Length: 299
Image (cartoon, rainbow, N blue to C red; front, side, top):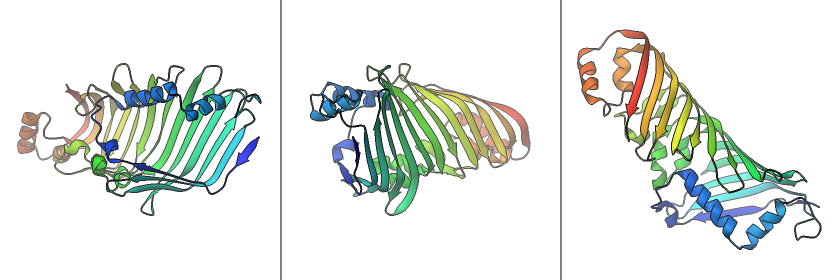
């Protein structure tokens, strides 16, 4: 049986408790806990989900169902405290079921206050034989500062005024665990100031980050780091580990065409403050055609 429902509206409100969580676990651990609660529940929703994840069979409630298409679906997420709304005005949701497994896709454009934020494509492929789901999220033209809007709890994103495109991919195994989450990001021209470590936002010409998150090691491996800051290029690898609010940082990179006059803008003064002060006082000219960068900051 194939079902198509046009013009469906889905609305959800985020209550104040969403932003008051004291759970300091990494995001992957919290997401796994959410999946585990869903798995262990006796709700009708989970019972139906189990049936949909099984091959089509006429003897069960959802056994005849092979495809659900929801074109022109409006999805609205509202923050109760600020009144901020994130909306997908004309989304397309498609669920297809076969003997091999289940595929779910969602595509649309996210808007905030009638302002276009980013196109989004979400895919989930469940393999009946392996009992695991591969999930892929693709996005483009995302500007985190615009996505945060008026939500105070997301104010950290306000310092990331830069367009981003990329994808996130992870597998949910038969135990509802996520061993590895891979990501690939490309950044355009803009400015960043993570954790407000700079006195003024750092201007970025272009950047790219490829890496993966290792849940068991509580670390983020940066397989590729590439930054263009004006005429200066930085390329290397890195590792973030430990607590998410103040992680350890290890970076090895090569630098080309670095003007000393710009060094004080690129170097966060709170790290290695003694060397930073000496360089800013004594060197104000010249250029480094080639050099290396080594960062080792413990948590």
